[in-house]
Image (cartoon, rainbow, N blue to C red; front, side):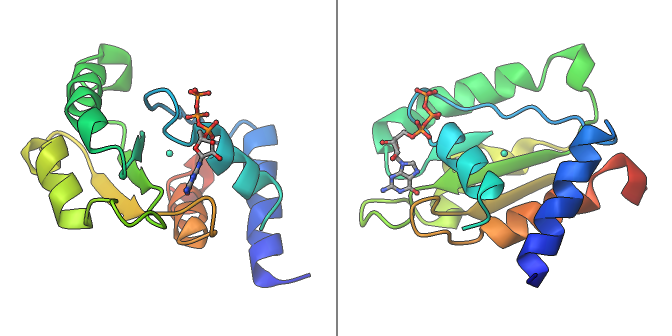
Length: 136
Ligand SMILES: Nc1nc2c(ncn2[C@@H]2O[C@H](COP(=O)(O)OP(=O)(O)OP(=O)(O)O)[C@@H](O)[C@H]2O)c(=O)[nH]1
């Protein structure tokens, strides 16, 4: 069993032991299902980084979500998906357009990923493990 498989099994066990609560949020067609599938078969706001028209809506939805008292202080992982597409935004452009630098009331992390080509899925899993309750 490889390192990635071991990490995936650990991640799954954290979910089953209810040591991790996770909300996976994103606009329609952003790639949420593909992300879950890529984690589940070893091959989380999720943004379609190649859908430039959708990013302003994503920004509004994200900042609206952050006002919810139930999510107060919860670390935020933003995933710019579909970087295999030539029209995908750069990380800096996504950070700017989503207004991530204005978020100061919680830890914010942004990774650029491709569920299609399995790019950076390992760092997403690593982040999730580091932010599980048992890691605290
Ligand atoms: N090129 C490319 N396409 C992707 C990637 N991830 C997902 N897709 C495609 O984008 C489409 C939407 O992916 P889903 O995972 O169904 O997105 P979703 O966010 O669950 O969508 P909803 O169920 O509508 O909310 C599908 O056609 C996927 O194959 C990626 O990294 N690159």
